[in-house]
Length: 412
Image (tube, rainbow, N blue to C red):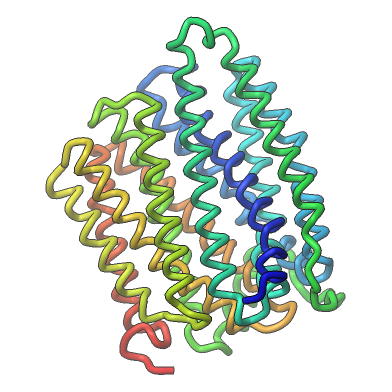
């Protein structure tokens, strides 16, 4: 891949990185700070609701996002979405100033809407920048930086939350929170203006339904034309459901079972993000311009072993951290071939609609995972949630091995 193409990646990568960083900074500020405004036994409900409100827009508005990515220049969609992020972070800041869970939750919802509307555009533009041969690298590198954004956003949220323990900084905590949210949003918008790929001509046909249920049915039927595509989308949806369960559960497990501070909890979450980022990047590199679906079962088995050991051993902090980071690494190995498969097999502007279909599926699964988390954690404890994750991982790994072309028994 030549130097010019690699340079062209940077505005997209940095824009996405800053957006993910700010999204996770806000979400974990809600987890760490907003939960202190209510009774302790309600914190799981707040975490569940915040996670659910972020994904609801993906379920309701993914068809619109897909249509936008098909009908309009993807770079313009990204730039306008990043501009929209600035007032959203201003609203979130008002919520923290007035200690209003209602306002911070509304900001989470708007953040999910903004992310939903430009998601098909940001992933669809990968092929426009690097061509088909750049898909594995572009997907792997962007996912690595995505999880680095998760890392820093989570870590900054934990550190900011614990500022109240320091006498000199405590009075300025909310000022720091608000300034950071708005600065990251402004930087993301400014850098997005540098995204300028050679895009395919927008498709102005208007046959796409905006009804989420009809959109889901029609997309499923169309995807049957490409062997394994629906299975790949199901695999990605399950991956994100697993990731959502782990993300919510680690917060509760570290606080209640391991008795860790918010800073320590966010540090573990940050290291987890490094693990999944490395898994994504290494998988993108070793794929060597090919779609390596045979790596999917390897990632699934690795996740299964690690998360099962957490449930069986109920380890202390050090071993828990090692096992959860290894789980994250293998999750990256599982995910990247599935993303690359979609980019490789779906041609032209149809890619935007299929990415929207993928978002609709995966965020439906994430919403269901929020319900599973709330139910299991309420009836049992965080350790049992890890057992549920192990069962789900086992099922999707077997399903992927049997049904995805090149992953196991089915040859291309």
